[in-house]
Each structure stands twice: as structure tokens, then as C-alpha cells.
Amino acid sequence: MLTLAEVLQFEAVRDARPEVLTGHDVLDRPVRWVHSSEIYEIGPLLSGGELLLTTGLGLAGSDAGARRHYVRELTDAGVSALALELGRSFPDIPPELVDEAARRHLPLIALHAVVPFIRMCEAANTAIVDEAARRLRLGDRVTRALNDALISGAGVAGLLRTAADVAGAAVVLTTASGALVASYGVPDDHAAWRAVDSAAAGSEVIVHGRSWGSWWPRRAPRSRRRTWPRPSSGPRPRSRWRFCAPVTRRPSASGTPPRSSPTWSAVRRPRRPRPSSGPASRASARRRGGC
View 1 (cartoon, rainbow, N blue to C red):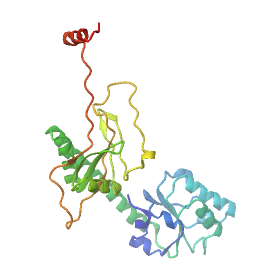
View 2 (view 1 turned 180 degrees about the vertical axis):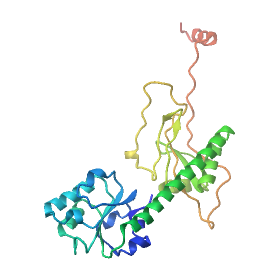
View 3 (view 1 turned 60 degrees about the vertical axis):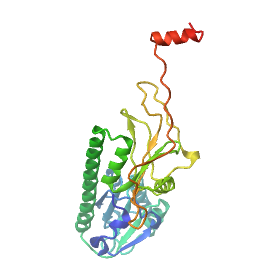
View 4 (view 1 turned 180 degrees about the horizontal axis):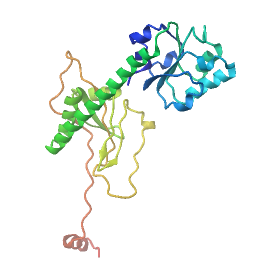
């Protein structure tokens, strides 16, 4: 997903001579859509993640309190940023808008040149849709490759190798308690933990249709690691692990090449199966003095 900083770099947006007045530290916010509106009560109609473009027409006849309320509603709706075009309704940004946006940590952008909003919306939204389509195609390709690996009986080693080849990244598998289980595309365990610390994306691991863990871009401190509750009913998963699978970029060409097989460590031995209630088990119980 595009960030606000990336949207501000589009040619159509740069032509409007944008000036960031507040929220300089949150320009990495994702922008889900670029939308324009002059409606004062637009806040409840938004779903969050929008960059809202306006000339301020709906604010021109309102007082300072109403303008502050406008900013609060946008913040409550989860808007990523507000861009106000100067010249039509306001020659300058009203100070109450700047103050309230700063209080609410909402990026407020002044557009000093007139550029058709449709031009900015088209440029940004086309890129947003293309990125979403690319992610869907990649997800479908990864899913197909992993399903083929499962059908062929590749095991965990084959799954990691397949995921690394398709995603073009190193893959690390860890437990909920922070133990390294397996990795592919890194030379040793130390490099695997460095990959976890700089992970760019992640995915939840599902065992027998149940969510048995999740993974995060960076390793959490021990005090913040959660224990995964056992299911109260239904069949228990075979695995006793909560898995994490951070994905990072491949090592550079000048670095150590990826290993041809995954690195294994800290694999817990599965519990011994309980004895069945057959004749052999009853005879063994009698020998131990049981009934």
C-alpha cells in the first residue's frame, strides 16, 4: 500500500506545490484511497485511510469551533491526511485548522497551486489499484506453489525453499517462545535472527484449520511475547508450537549465498502418545501392579 510520502511525490501532486504543515512524523501512513469532497459532514461517510482533497468550500461560512469539529471528525474516521487548496475559499490556512490538526496528529497539507483534483485522484488511485492487483497476483502464485509443494510431500524444508524462491526473499520459521525452528536463504542462525529483526512482512500459520500462532515483522521482547491458549474443545493440532515466519530481503550478491537446505535448531521433541486401552496395555498395567 502506498504511503502518504509516496503520494506526495506523484507529478500531479507536486504540480500543486504541496506544503506539509502538520504531521511531519507520520508521513509513512498508508493511503488507501485519494478522495475529494466539499461536504462539511464528510467524516462519517469515510471508511479510513483516505487522503482527502478539498478547496474548503464547506468551511468558508463556518466559525473556528466548527472548523475544529471538522478536523476531529476526520481524525475519528481514520483519514490519513487532509489537503486544502488555497485561493478559492481561503487565501491562507485558518490557524484553528493547523492547531487542531497538530493536536490530533493529522497531516495537514496546503496546496499552493490549482491542479484539478481528478488529475491527482487518477494518478494516485491508479497506482493504489495496480499495487493491490500485484499483491493479489503474488499471493495467488505463492499459494499455488505452496500447495504443489505440500502435494508432493516436500515437508517443512521444501515449503520454506518454495516460499523463498517465489517471494524472492529469505524465510525464517520461529516458535512463539522465540526459538528458531528453520530458515532458508540465510547462512547461519545469527543471520536468521538478523533477518527476523529486519523482517519486512509476515503471515499467520494455520494448523488443522485453527490459528495456532502468528508472526511479526520484528521479534518482540520476552516480556511481551504471549502464550498461545490451547483450544478448549475439538481436535488438538499436531504441532505444539506457535510458529512465526518472517520474510526478509535476500542477501546481496556480494554476501554469502543462500544455503541449499534449511538450518534447523531448537526443535522440540513431540510428546509420547498415550498407551491405548488394548490387551497389550492392560497386560503392561498388570505388570506394574495396576488393575
